[in-house]
Image 1 (tube, rainbow, N blue to C red):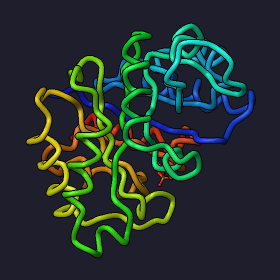
Image 2: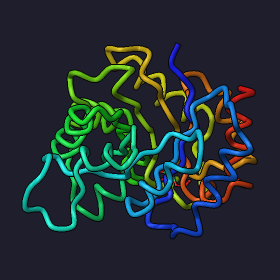
Image 3: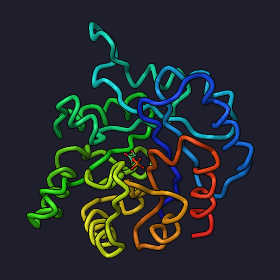
Image 4: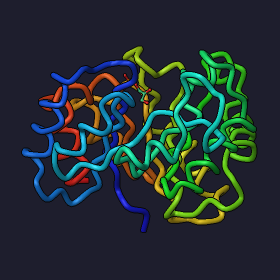
Length: 239
Ligand code: 13P
């Protein structure tokens, strides 16, 4: 059985004051029956280790271990700062930084090499869904972005339809079920956790977690405040 993960991606949000939210999450869930993961901005990672029993992740890493890459952070540095996970291939990285599948695969491999679990993000645009090519896009991203050495230990897949991120739009449960079943069939290791991401909030979490092959969520906006994220953790524990 894949393990269950409630993951938060803080994106480019948060200063030291935000660490109180992390502590509040840890305090509200001292012994969660699911894994709780927060990916704060890199500037907060080292300090976030004091917050308690919450797993931490980076939001991106460079494919190389070190060198002349101004402004970048390596997977080894993230691990050294206290991360055990790293997001790779988030659609905002693919769009803002023109990351293609090969880049995402290289970054995911770099995460493995540093001992991190890569949370590899995939998902179709609205135009691709309307053109009926969603499953083809997903297949292409899986083939291109996920290293052949992916296992349930070093990899999590997050299905995040680009049109559902930060929009309040959510696919139907049938649409989520179709894509997640497709991803499960495609992956060699059937225990790789599959997360859904895109406008997850307390009010829709239980419905989404009831969808077959959904092992948790990757949450953006609703992970920034403990009072919003805590009920999502509870919904996953009860799923
Ligand atoms: P929202 O939950 O804000 O839609 O963001 C989803 C996301 O991109 C998580 O990585």
